[in-house]
Amino acid sequence: MVDQSAFIHPSAIVEDGAIIHANVYVSPFCIIGPQVEIGARTMLKSHVVVSGITHIGEDNQIYPFASLGDVNQDLKYAEELTRVEIGHRNQIRESVTIHRGTIQGGAVTRVGNDNVLMVNVHIAHDCTVGSHCIIANNATLGGHVAVDDYAIIGGLTAVHQFCVIGTHVMVGGCSGVVQDVPPFVIAQGNHATPFGLNIEGLKRRGFDRTARNAIRAAYKVLYRSGKTLKAAKSELEALAKEHEVINTFLDFLPRSQRGIIR
Image (cartoon, rainbow, N blue to C red; front, top):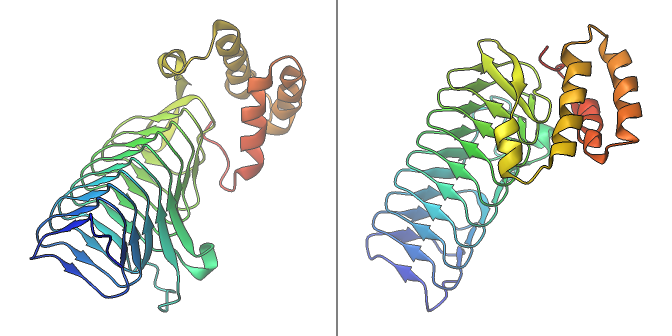
């Protein structure tokens, strides 16, 4: 079904079964598969391929040579009916690849809202990218990676499978992330290690001085006290009774499968 208000360039291929909503703009030489749904006012800016069971929300800008929903690179994949879900108002720049999920990983690769995925970013199978994230040129997320809201990942950075990047994290360019990065932390290097807190980012996003000081105190507990993670967690729990923001750390730690960077 193609809405009457949508523009489909004559050179584009939209296969039967695709759902194209109001005011979608499909530029020359795009290919849209039969199980694809594209939300209102989304623009495909030529040579974009959208395949598989892929749902794209509203007001996205998708640039040339992006490939969304294609077969993943997991050798266990056997053409199961897995999918890609992309939210609203994302900028998906040139040559970005977002691969469909696997049965073993929950069957869906998901990207939230208001993200910027720069040139040549790769989002592998079963990844979850939150909202308001920036992933810079040539960054790569291995399978099953989770990137929480407001995270920034620098260019040419590789994130190992199953890693978790916490909210408001900044990962510097050319890093190799092989363990989980707790919320608010700046990480850099190969392998990435902590370099303090993303204080400027927190100021820009409205965290007041009290909240920032509480986050500083939590960082000192995790990284400068010399305590084991178990002991640090107990101290964070006590700190959280006075400062709600510390629950962000406590919610993050149980999600960690690979251990946190230290």
